Image (spheres, helix red, strand yellow):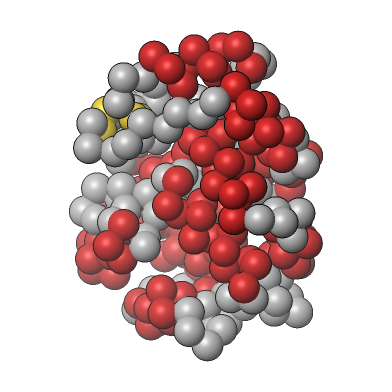
Length: 231
């Protein structure tokens, strides 16, 4: 991926004119534009560079580290998950080694302002196209997706903020598969007060096996009908 310079991101920040983009390439005028001063933009980049080792220089995700593309996620979801790592909701299960790393990384955010600055910086990065690495039965996956997942994530898998459910079109399939299994196996979502995690565990009880998980993920990938736009 082409390196994004500070000056080019500055141009993005001041020329968007209120238009934001979703990971599937559509425009969402109802979403607020993110603008940062040059000082805040530089601060956000400096903070993010500590994340880039695992998530990639442009927040595109790195399969070798099983890390997701942060650039494809909504700012409210990034905020929620960072807060979950900070408050003990995520990353403290003995089998969640990746979560444990995130807990330590999240601690570098010493103030709420730093958290908002880094997620605002990530929001300005170009969306990325995710590569398919899991191949299953899309028709069977469609059946189970509509039965189990669509009520929270939407029929189009673009997520629903009211349920704090992320846009699944922007999540790499390898990462999605790992997190679904974490919910199913009680590695994620069991912390007291994690209502969204508890809901995931409840719904996943309707998914019979690993093959069906792969089928659902395969179907979700078919919903990515357009390549994301680049700023």
